[in-house]
Amino acid sequence: MTPQKESPETQYDAFKNELQSIIDLNHPLAKISRCIDWKLFENKFGETYSEQGRPGKPTRLMVGLQYLKFTNDLSDEEVLEKWVENPYWQYFCGMRFFEHKMPIDSSSMTRWRKRVGEDGAELMLKETINTGLRTKVIKRTELERVNVDTTVQTKEIRFPTDARLYDRMRESIVKAAEEAKIELRQTYVRVGKKALFKQQNYARASQYNRSKKETRKLKTYLGRVVRDVERKMERENNKNIEELLRLAQRLLSQEKKSKNKIYSIHEPDVECIAKGKATKKYEFGSKAGLVTSAKSNWILGSKAFHGNPYDGHTLKESLEQSERLTGIKIIQAACDKGYRGNNYEGTANIIITDGRKKRISKSAKKWMRRRNAIEPIIGHSKSEHRLERNKLKGQLGDSINVIMSSCGFNIKKLTRAFCAIIGNWINALFSSNFNLKLNY
Image (cartoon, rainbow, N blue to C red; front, top):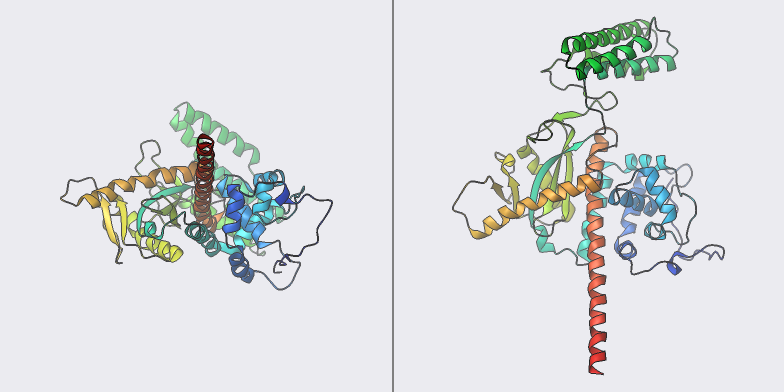
C-alpha cells in the first residue's frame, strides 16, 4: 500500500529528543537534505505500490537509506546499524525525533530496489545533479562537455574453475532434489568433496595430469546426478529443478572456446571481459559506461551493458542517458581510442584521444588531456562506492548498482562542496573580526 504522508503538524512527544535540537543544522548532510526534492520521489515511486495491504514505509526513508548505503560503502545491515547511532543520518531520512530502533528490516531495502528498478535509480541520480544545479554548486555550462569511458563492474563471485563449477552444480541439484523429496540413487557428497580437494592440491603442486583426472571425475558425478534427476522428474513439475538442469546441461556441454559460458552457478549471467590490464587479464562481471563532466568531474550518467559489447557501440546509449538526466544538450565528448569506429550519429563533437600527433587547436588538446580525469573517478567509485564487487543479484542488480554507485559519488561531492562553502564563510567571518580588532 502507498506510504502514509506525514502531517507537518505532528504531535510533540515529550519523551523523545527532537533532532533539530541536538544536531548542527549547518552540517553539510543536513543542508543537503533540505535541498533535495523529496516530494518528487513520493510522486514517482508512489505509482509502484499497491492499493491494498498495510502502508509502506516513508519514501524519503527508503531513498535516504539507499543514498547513505552507496555514499559510505555499506551493506544493508551496516547502514541500518549506523543509522540508529547517527542523528544526522536520521535527520537526512526525514525523522523528526531520535529513534533507538531500526526502522525496517534489511531485506526491505532489497525488495524496494527491485520495486523501483533501473528507472527509479536513474531518477535518484538525476536528483543529485539537479540538487547541485539548484544550489549553484554545478554550473549548467559545465555539463555541455563530457568525458566518456567504460570499466568492468566485477561480480561478487569466486574465480571460476571447471572442477569447482561441476561440484557446486552437483550440490545445487542435490539440495533442490532433497527439498522436492526426490530420492536419488547416489548424491556423491563424500566422494565429490574428496575429488575436489585432490584436484586443488594437484593443481597447486603443478601435477596437471592428476588434476585433470579429478576434474573428469567431478564432471562424471554431475552427469550421473543430472540423468538420475531427469528420470525421476518426468511426473513432476518443478521450475527450480528444471532451471538447474538446463544450467547443468550448458555446463556439461561447454568447452574452452565456447561462447556464452557459465562462470558462476548462482550468477549465470556473468561475462568474462578482457580490458587489456597487466594485473588482471580477465575480469568477471558486466561492462559499465560512465559519463562525467569534463571540468568539474560530476557523474552525469552510468549504465550497465550486457553481452560484452565493443566500447564504441556503447557511446550512443551513454550520451543519450546523460542528456536525458541533465536535460542539457552535449556539444563535446572526449573518449579514448577504444571508441574508434563508434556508432554515434548525434550532433556532439567526439574527440578521440589516440595519442597521435595531429594539427589540432590548443582548445582540442586541452580537452584531450582533460579526458584522463575520468580515470580517478572510476577508481573512487570502485574503492568507495561499491562498484568493484557488485553484490546485487542478476542483470537488474548490475544496472541498479552502477547507477547507485554514481549517486553515492555525487552525494559525497555535494557534501564536500557544502563543507567548502561553510569553511569559506567561517574564514571570512574570522578575518572580518580580526580586522575589526585591529581597527579598534
